[in-house]
Each structure stands twice: as C-alpha cells, then as structure tokens.
Image (cartoon, rainbow, N blue to C red; front, side, top):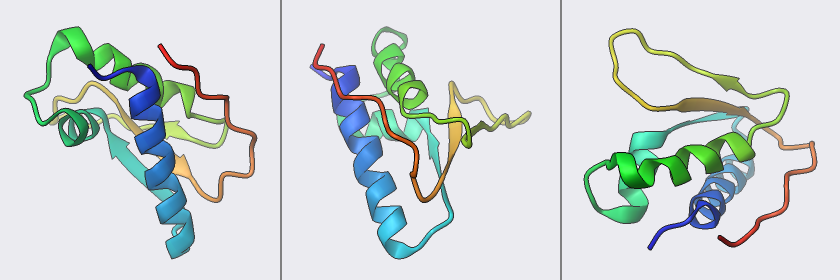
Length: 92
C-alpha cells in the first residue's frame, strides 16, 4: 500500500534530479505522480496521500497551479534550488 512517505520520497527524488540538471523549477501533477507509483487509475480513496505529500514538500517559494480546462486534484510548481529546510519524512 502506498503512503504519504512513498509519495514524498518520489517528489524529493524528482526535485533532486531536476536540481542536478540545473532546472529552476519543477511542476508535478498529482494524477501523474499517483499513477507513476501505483500503476492504478486515480482513486479518491488513495489520492489523499499523494496530495498530502505534495503539500508537505511545499515551501514559501512554491506555488499552486490551476488549469481551468483541466481536471486535476493538485498541481504544484516547486522552485529550485531547494534552499529551505524540508520537513522530515514520517512513515505512516
């Protein structure tokens, strides 16, 4: 079963990779993130763990993105580099 910690680990991995490439930001969509880890269709029951992880990794420089024509639970633009101290991972 997936947990918030699993999603946070994947977000951090993606952020580290993007920073290594020298990117200035990284946009992550909750539906894509969920599908990449679960290989299952997006489910109301489990999506909360994904969205909680995305919010937990946000800092003051990050922003939510809203697409009027696109149905998405949550899309976040994370700014790089991640100079702010990130919250600790907790296992659930």
